[in-house]
Amino acid sequence: MTTRVLITGSSHVAALKLGWDQISTEFPDIECIFLAISGPQLWRFSTNEKNEFGIFDFTDMSSTLRDHFASIESSVDLNTIDTVLVSGSKWEFQAVLRALTKCDVDGLFTTDRDVPSISLPMFEAFCAEVAERAYRSNDYWAKHFQNVPLSFIPQPRLSEASLNNEDQWHKLKSYTANTAKALSALEKKYLDVVRAHDIRIFPQPSSTIADNGFTKAEYSRNSVRLVGGDQHPEQDTAHMNQDYGEIVLREILPKMVSELARLS
Amino acid sequence: MTSPYSNLPSKAFWRSAVTDRPALEPGDLYEPKIKIRKRMTKIVTAGSCFAQHVGRTLANSGFNVLDGEPVPLRMSDALANRFGYKLFSGRYGNIYTVRQLVQMMDEAEGLFQPATPVWEKNGRYYDAMRPNVEPEGLESPELVMKQRKEHLKKVLETYKQADLFVFTFGLTEAWIHKESGTVYPTAPGTIAGSFDPELYEFKNFGFTEIMADFVSFRKRMKKYNPAMKFLITVSPVPLTATASGNHVEVATSYSKSVLRTVCGTLYDKFRDVDYFPSYEIITSPNNRGVYFESNKRSVSSKGVATAMGLFLQAHNPGDDAEKGGATAQKAKKKGPQNADKAKDDEDAVCEDALLEAFAR
Image 1 (cartoon, chains in turn blue, cyan):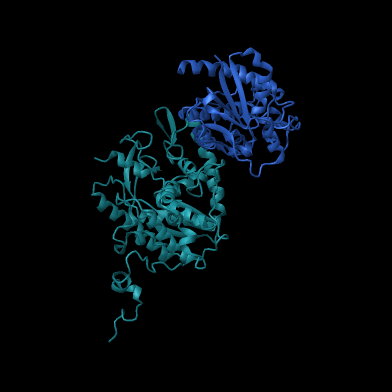
Image 2: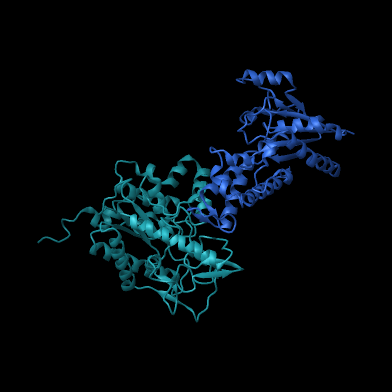
């Protein structure tokens, strides 16, 4: 029996789609259906009275995007879907990185900079607040999929290449010894918050994470746009490539299927 | 024959000034003695938990309230407040007694070392001089002392920049270290530490001591800035508990009377000291107690808005005081849910309220 998995979300779905194209033959019992739209347009997704999920209103949509959705199915009948995976749920890791540019955290992130220090309990409380806020910015997914098992994979951590970018996290480049611990502190809070809402969440595979807590640079090279299939510009450090997509799906699809079996 | 009362203004007479005043009308209780130039006068604030309302209202109304320890992260005010940020001009928490204030400045200048500066509870360590700023405590006494050192440095830098010091007198009762005289904001054993009657004792500061402490503090601030001015108030919040042996109402009356007398004397003695009658505004019989919450102790957001509205009207007559100052009032206009949220965000952080847990 085939398990039908709807993989939806933002532009981060592109890496999963490319990855799936490479590995789908390894999973003959799984069918993945992809339906995604860029982050700023996510509000266009809705469900209708027929229990279909997708885009039903094309008002004021760019012609490129309209053409894209004309060439694919722009909605999915949720009655035919066994489980849903939302890719790219925002967990606001940038908030932690911004924090680390401004202060040290006693016992977690200490540097020789002339910046204020905050305590570890305060940093953890800050992470908890960020995680709650981040979940609230994603909670519409739970409303869309009330009758289908729902899983999240968080937005991938930025590529470590962003440390070389003067417009991004260059300020942290000399202080990456403990950025991983700081990012993990937030990730843990975010996982806890999402799980508390009965949503399954799979953390980013550890094999894709560099020692500094960012995504290994190799996974952001030659990433591809969701619409049109062009490559992202070289300085794009947010989107990941096909290799990343393969690793993620290999790790989580079997878990999703076994969870479904357990539930049934 | 004329009476010395015959030419006095109506505000001098209870009947015209209070009896005939509409209920909840705050009246003309305050005429500023000093001028505060909005955005120009650099203000520092300290005091008991009621002082948090004063500082917040001033800051929200565009006054230049200095913050020597700004919260370095983007977070909600409620969370920042929980860790002692955005309450006063430094992260010192509530300063209930003037002795505590003097002691903090002595320590900042390297003239004083508190006895038992770190308190322990369940393997976590707390700054005995501000035990509430890290509600979960820290991992080691060393971290507490490191934070304290950084904090005091910032306090000193900030106070040296100030033009106006705003202080709310809170309590006369305190707990001190017998041998050194170190005064603590809370009794040992309330938030952390443990009470040892061999080491600590109760102290009810009297007029002479409080007066002397404030005069010495004023002298120190004048050294930093000879043009420094002072705006003092008495917290209208009654004691949560008293260790004096008296009934808590009697003890409250005594404590507030002493503090009010100190303020009156300072006001009369120094041209640069002004008194703002928040105590009188909140406790006036004209209010029939409605400026207190149901526990008859905490000041309601309406009470805070009224008191601070009067303050802003006096110092900022061009603006609509209600609009400019009373943040709680503003939220109230937006609807009850927002008012509740604003209240949650703006509730004062009061360590002394923790004594409630010991009530029988």
